[in-house]
Each structure stands twice: as structure tokens, then as C-alpha cells.
Length: 239
Image (cartoon, rainbow, N blue to C red; front, side):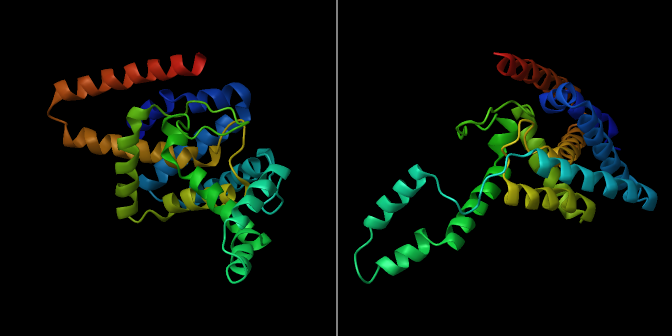
């Protein structure tokens, strides 16, 4: 059972507290989806799956409608200047048509922007290090999960993937599709990924606990470390 570990993850992350303080409705939806995911992993239930599907669609809509829109093909004056500078670096005549296709066509611009959106959405720095050192211009970065949870998250993803949990994979892939198309410039971050991340961290934490069950001193030291990092993260977020 992952529920005690899930409770620790929900309590010791600033992301959900920030969301609850700004949008209580959204925060409750996220907590509900996270709990539903955990329950389904223990005991599949068609009724619960239906509830999860409805809440999941609502969450994707909220992410789409509250995220700042950015064109996939339009360029600002500064971006046009940079593009033209790059085009002038290519050898003339033979290579220029290739350069224009690679740098200037709307299709290639859209492709690289989608690729950039995807890379932002899957960057661990965004979730565990307040996006340092890749802070975005014009976007207020904030702490989400304490960085000490990163190993547990990675182990949790591997464990859930090995168990072929289709619901978990959907809870990752569908939000990633939305974030790739829309971007993640949202005052509350890419919150559609919160349930999957929380469940993965809880699963990874339980994995470590089971491996160290008989070593109580180590477990106590890890708990103290997690609490200390949470306090440190809280201080970073405030100041």
C-alpha cells in the first residue's frame, strides 16, 4: 500500500500548497485524481476509472485554458533578426535553399517549438530545482517538489512502467501531449503532471522503504533529511 507514502508526498511539497492557496477547486481535483490513481493501482475498479477519466479530461481542459498561448510559427522581430543572422552563415547558392527550409519554413519553426515545449515539460529541473539553471525569461519559477524526491521519482517511474500500468502511462502521456502543443507558461506550472509525479514519488519511496525496512537508523536519517530539505525549499520559495 502506497497511501502513507503518498500522504507524505502530498504534505511535503510546495506545489500543491501553492495551488490550493490560489485555486482551491483545482487543488482538490488534483488531490482527488492522485488518490484515484493510487487506489486503481492497488485494486482496479470500473466506476473509479470512469470518475478518473472525467476528472482527467476536466484537468486537461483547465491546463489548456489557463496556459498562456504562444504561436508555433510566428516570430518576433528579435527572433527574425537571429534567424536571418543564422541564414547568412550558410554558404551561398547550393546550401541556401536547404538553410531556408531548415531555418525559415513555418513547418520547421513549428517543429522546433514543439520540441522545445516537450523538452521543457520533461525537464526534471522544472519540478525539483525550480527550473534552475534553465530559468525562463518572463516566467516566475517556483519550487514544486523537494529535490530529495528526485531519486524516488525515477525509481517509481521504472517500477510502474515495469508493471505495465496503462493508467499511469496515460496520466503521463496525455498531459505531455497538451503541454507540447500549448507550452507550460502557466502561473501554476504544468499541473496536469502533478498526480503522475506524486504517485511515482510515493511508489519510489515505498521501494526504498522496503529495501531498508530493517535499517531503522537509515530510515530515520532519511526522514530527517526529507524534512530538512522541505524546510530549506520553503525558505527558498519565500525569499
